[in-house]
Image (cartoon, rainbow, N blue to C red; front, side):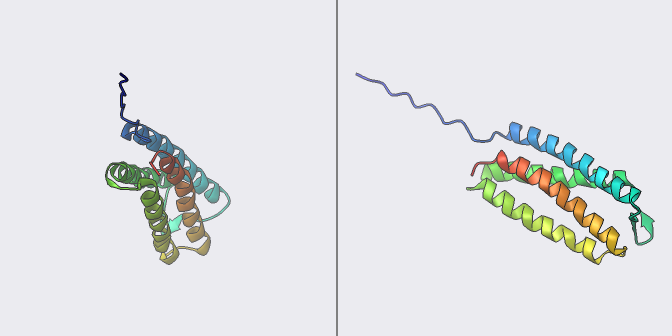
Amino acid sequence: MTTTVHTPRAATSTVGKLIGTGVIATVAASVATTAVAAAGDAAGISLDMAGAPIPPSGFGTLTAVFSLVGVVMAAVMSRFARRPRRLFVRTTLVLTALSLVPDAIADAAPATKALLMVTHLVAAAIVIPALARRLSA
């Protein structure tokens, strides 16, 4: 007589690993956007919007906040979505595109608008793939 033991298949992504990866990606993206803003400032690109300067550290802070929102979204999608990776990538790409709209219409110089858009794209290029790799296909 043979006995077959069925062990539950390990989840492709655990929430703990997803959150850990998300925090690391958030830190990396925050550092990167701060560096991009500082480099733009050093190159002479104004960081003023509507006459008020944005400190380079402000870029990192906002990147951290919105990246952590993305981590929460990924965690929720990993739990409830049938295809969490696909849903996460599609959702975050749309949100990234939408995040460029306020930059495009902001009361700022064209170079400032471009720098703002670049920081959004840099953050997305770091955070989205890092989290997507941790989600089930």
